[in-house]
Length: 379
Image (cartoon, rainbow, N blue to C red; front, side, top):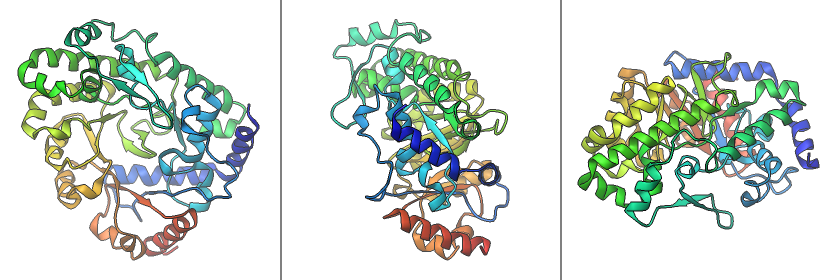
């Protein structure tokens, strides 16, 4: 084990404890089920200070080096830091994942994965329709293909490394990787032509979505013995994007935001519902402005929540009113600092919301968190 990772694990082992983790878990459980809470759970993101003793490794070095990936997951995933949770005092869960980006399912179908400089990996779409059709002939449940073996091996490394720290092994949750969603995965293979296909070749697109959904569910189930999220401690909760959410999986739906709600309901929703239903329920995520899709998202029988990549681009209060009737929580909502400091966020959203906040520094994150607790809990 590299010395820096060993020192990091020793440090984290001294700053986390079972009591505080139990408090965080209970706060999430109550919020996600729309029960009364003293305050909404919140996770802060912030730049690491210049004198931080465990600087992250370049992102490009983590894909072939499991120690560096684990180190970075503990240090600065999603702009948060498990290594700094004691200094911030927020509700950051103790979670790590095999962080290979968005390309895992696409690689299973032969998608051409590239990774350049410090950018996340991406998959170039096939250049011809024939190549795309050939990709769909691959066995969607053959997890010896693509990047799937690397993902599985990475979780094995996490488990082996954490086994030397029994307390951390019991507290840190290994979460599913980013498996995208049916349409997002098909778009990675087909490119923007998928939007033409939705009109001109709906049957072929439906077949592609069906196979992408089959692969996503299959690989998620394949990883269940390896990950530790959603176990006996919190069987109804999983973790993605550095927060807790109800259900067992999160579908990424960044591609469908460019279509109407009617088209989503007609051509995409059945495949999203299949993934959610077969996994035992889960949430839907999108970046950008997608409030027009929130009604069909909420109407899916197996959907449990909506996760926002850019909540400021949406009318969150209107979506909250929609979600209240289904008691479907909204995840990763950002509010102005003053609403945290004066506690007015609790009048705006009494429960059913998980908050995030971008602070300018680690010290500022700690200051705002203390003020938020004082305004809501009298702490």
